[in-house]
Length: 168
Image (tube, rainbow, N blue to C red; front, side, top):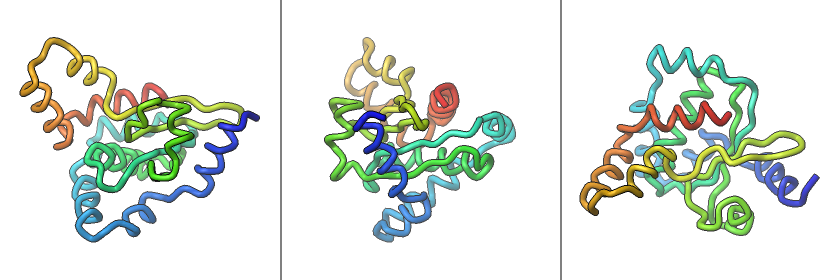
């Protein structure tokens, strides 16, 4: 087993559940997380997709203040609520930058890793790749900012779910 995989498994084992994570946050931050948890509830079609997820362990690097993280964590928690075979734990970016740099040199969050006993792989990094391609394209700054604002409002839930489910 590689040193980095050992560290990742250790972080998973000591990581926080969603409830522990939001309980440790300031009240204002906790309220925001709970708002998104409700706003990102799964519809019937999404529930059916969630039920097809096979057993998986995910490690999520994030920070409680991060708006992008709130959206993604809410979706993960709702997926887990429907299908407990999807297990995940949360580790703060603070104190874990070195291991994150092994996966993504820029340490962008949320950063999600799927873990098996013998390996790990990157599942998700900051925003969906499809959205990143759009933002990296031929848009002006105000168009890019509008997309980011809509992302942080949860309007790209389908794209987030597509990327998560396709990689786990």
